[in-house]
Image (cartoon, rainbow, N blue to C red):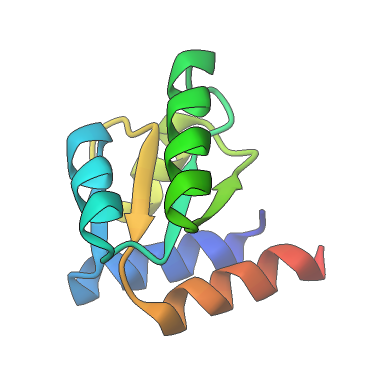
Length: 102
């Protein structure tokens, strides 16, 4: 993941289309609002397994970033965060495009 992705996550936060943390992410995934699930590289294996299973079951894309919880949190102006969801199709597509460019 590159700095463009971090900047874009900040824009998603400011637009109100970002859900931060486990409970908010699960809620958005189950309601169908989430278009992309992003996990920090240092998230627990239990959380990775849970989110991966949920996203597969619901058909939502998932992205395991290389950034730590702290780095993701700094990019969105939050406290430490292991999982978040992007709840906008356009932002989600652009993040996926940027990660493929690497």
